Length: 244
Ligand SMILES: NC(=O)c1ccc[n+]([C@@H]2O[C@H](COP(=O)([O-])OP(=O)(O)OC[C@H]3O[C@@H](n4cnc5c(N)ncnc54)[C@H](OP(=O)(O)O)[C@@H]3O)[C@@H](O)[C@H]2O)c1
Image (cartoon, rainbow, N blue to C red; front, side, top):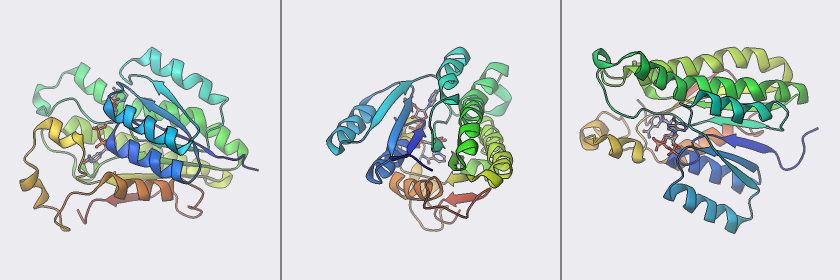
């Protein structure tokens, strides 16, 4: 039997997509375990909104590049109640041609986009399976589909590794009610692109629907797959990408 309200852990709650996902679960009455790295205005705004809504929530600050800190933060989750996990934190610090990347940069990309999500998923999986119910959504990218550009190969490869978690845990969890899926956002209108100084007009022309997506459009799909509304979709990769 599930307790009420169900609990969702969302990483990267300080991002536009993560905050939209948090709002969507909060609107549905879930308790939120919100992870972020560096705080900032998005966190303050989200916290104020959730306070106004009366949402049950807690915040955890951890840098996924800090391996001991990740292990310390993950350990208590083995005994905690987590009904859904949204592995949303991810990205890359800079566009950098693959030929200029060293071991450290490649490992950092894996640490953020793969290793921490792997440890989180592993920590909460047994509890979900033991209770006979759980949902996970791994936020990948269309970069995993296309391999990323020469400047984002490290990111595309790390997101591919992330998608491997979905593959294995969907099979492992199927007999115990744990449904695991991947969402691949396309070009979504967030700080992700503006920080990298990209010309979004040129990029947007490649999108069949002719515009960038919104964080809310991603959040709606994540919430469907990652809540108990979803009863029969597992092991799938869903692109929210305007047709790309
Ligand atoms: N926007 C897009 O077009 C797009 C497309 C495909 C996939 N995605 C994926 O969607 C997810 C959310 O991205 P976004 O566009 O909303 O924006 P974003 O602003 O790039 O968000 C990245 C999030 O990941 C967190 N993060 C980054 N490095 C971290 C680290 N070392 N340790 C812990 N957390 C870290 C950030 O935390 P802090 O802000 O607190 O540092 C932030 O919450 C990411 O996984 C991204 O790869 C986005």
